Length: 199
Image 1 (cartoon, rainbow, N blue to C red):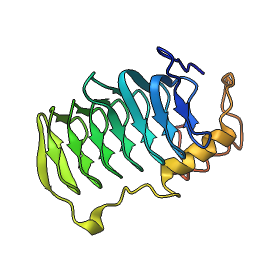
Image 2 (cartoon, one colour):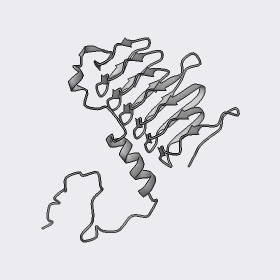
Image 3 (cartoon, helix red, strand yellow):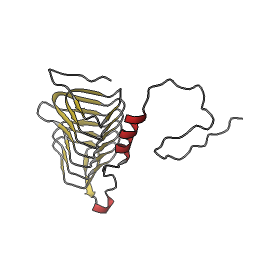
Image 4 (tube, rainbow, N blue to C red):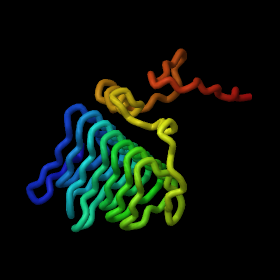
């Protein structure tokens, strides 16, 4: 697992967090308990500090970086969707960042907010709690009613459970040449897929 100290600063990863073997924390990075850090994620604490609070999910190929003036802080229970870039910004508790979004320096996103996929949140943006944010450049579209905040990551959130499942059950292996009869399914509960029969 590639974990790199930088100028004497060693990343801190809580043992109850799953850090995929291809994720790369560098330098001043602090990751709390119950997090899922997915394949290809890069967390670079070389200009400032990257903090990922507990029960957060940093999905595949995300980049978390800082500027020399702004740390990158991901609040408790946040979900950062696949391929997103967070640069020197602050996310409050339970923020959901849609896939392939970019949040730039000194932006501050209030708790329980949702950033739509492919959004560009410009530097210095301030969004209050429960904001629906979308666009390029992104803007606050509306306030989200309290009863519509469905993505909160408590102790039993989907990616918190995936972190525990991955700590217990992820094993590097080689591929099979063909699907075996009676193949099981992941415990996550996705529907079975029917394959077309070859003629």
